[in-house]
Image (cartoon, rainbow, N blue to C red):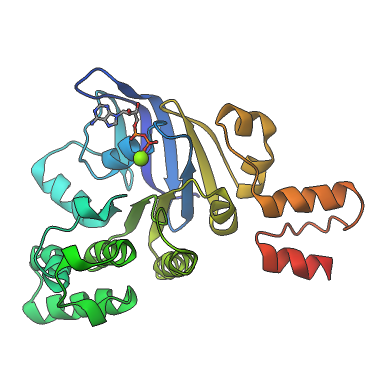
Length: 276
Ligand SMILES: Nc1ncnc2c1ncn2[C@@H]1O[C@H](COP(=O)(O)OP(=O)(O)O)[C@@H](O)[C@H]1O
Ligand SMILES: [Mg+2]
């Protein structure tokens, strides 16, 4: 049976100025998967993410974590914030301590773990995110990419079961983006459910197990990357552009230049292998 780690049903949420950001949204996130959420600016991605760890509370509908309805009581919120880590789009909204080390230590220190464990978790998180060498730097001197990695380290150090990243590669250079995706794969291989939003559909296509499309505060489609990005109606409705690897592959097979074998290439390396 499929195990869902996060579920939301009929979620409605309005901001104080009256903007209806979520309009009866339904979503179920399968445990242990690599999940991507795609959709226009303003579609509701960030708003949804902030519901998943209790920052926002819905006006209507319910959210479940591991099958249990979130009731917003203190004890449960503490558990939820520990288990569902969010990396904000803008690291300047996440980093607030003087040094990198201090920033990453904030979460683990508040977990009530023994000091030795705390130190170990911090070091592991800094090493995994390749920020150990800058641990004594003031956070405001870091580059955007470094800040992003430190923000991730801070979440990682708490060992959440679910890691949510709001546009994690926005503003990163190509190498930074590739490293980020490798890091996210590692989290996932270690058992975490990884959820991200992104406008880079080539990258989503190459990386995700499951893609959700959000449009005007609702999930309008869910499926494998191939299913979603071949669904012209959905793509048009959400103003998405077909990933180039899939587009070229479909073009080449339609022309009879390569045969369909059941394998769909997800990136340039896989496409080249097929062409060879
Ligand atoms: N703090 C806020 N106050 C008022 N409206 C907001 C606020 N944050 C977001 N919105 C609005 O809510 C809708 C959804 O925004 P958001 O969740 O940020 O979308 P996305 O992350 O997909 O770009 C948009 O119409 C946006 O303008
Ligand atoms: Mg957003």
